[in-house]
Figure 1 (cartoon, rainbow, N blue to C red):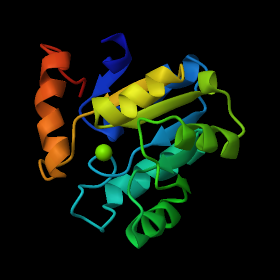
Figure 2 (tube, protein in one colour):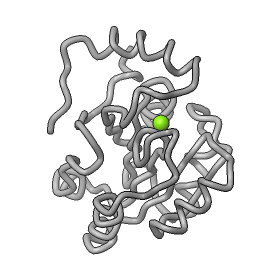
Figure 3 (cartoon, protein in one colour):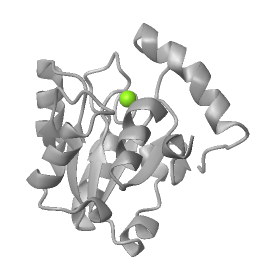
Figure 4 (cartoon, protein in one colour):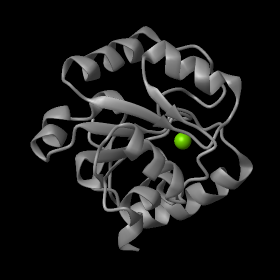
Length: 164
Ligand SMILES: [Mg+2]
């Protein structure tokens, strides 16, 4: 169960307290895409997300999108936001996260995984000893198996509510 618990839980990526992460020695974000940065059914990067990405760079964070997705869309969005990319990730398996750490020349202690799913993002990050940040999903649209897992997520999270 401990591997499924996020260190931090926010209502959205834009609510993440970057100072808290920086003080904890985090300088790299391994960021999920679908329902974390954009709704799964959207290709349009909203202005506020562009501003958030620019703010990350200003604060000196490196960002790598780590996505189980593999469509052209993922590459376009990474390029648009100025993020590095590891796709075909097969999270929660560790390989893509390890590839992203190598890409960013970072240790696990210097990285935080940010995503909307306990069984992919948070589990994978915790297994490698990274900080883990859960965000509430941007939309209720998701893959059928993900929607099933959401029920288990609700059990794991219990009364825990995201910080706004
Ligand atoms: Mg996701």
